[in-house]
Length: 243
Image 1 (cartoon, rainbow, N blue to C red):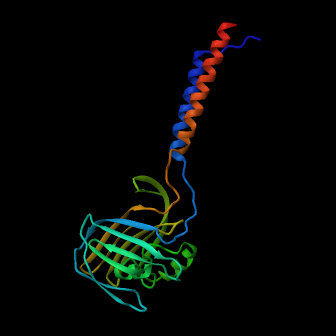
Image 2 (cartoon, rainbow, N blue to C red):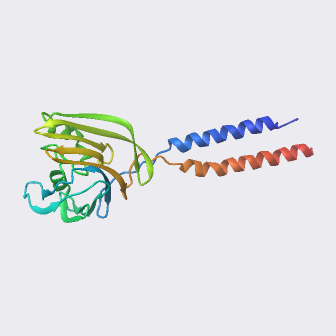
Image 3 (cartoon, one colour):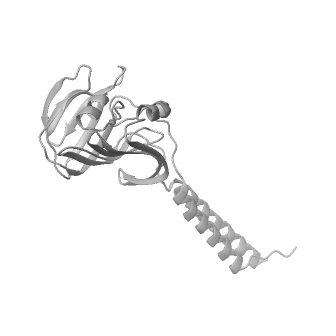
């Protein structure tokens, strides 16, 4: 049997494999379940802020007063979960130079106006009850739409996420725009305002594993396959030349 491998065919196969490598590297996503727990942290960069002096009152009940706070552009808002055993998670909240302890997610929602009364979204929406959330924001001058493949950079990585976008238009003077990841419920970015107060933040980093991170995992595993294929074809071609 006369078997020949042409240089052209080798080049064709190598080109196809390289193209597949590039395609795979751009579309592979990681899929992991999200379970919030103590030690989980979300960090937001302040894109803009009113720099007003704000009173920090937690959600009612009990509506405790925690102190005053103010933030400026480029400062950070950080929330670390410290207690996930209660019905409402608690954590440490850092607002610029101010730190508050034993703060519930609903306290954050109330104090920072990351909410659409009676819904207190805060940093984490309840992903098991999107239908209930939809019902709660009825008659609040709010639109809620699903946006697929929303792109955001988190931890210096690119993410493609399905999100719910909430847009509030003059609900008793409140104007807000919230974007939550559908799968994890994490607040990705928001702009909210009421009177002279406004706050614009975007999620910059987190230690929580999220769906949708665009990776090149297959590329790293695929390149050795390409190298092995080239070696085999080269070795086979040398053997055929000798026969």
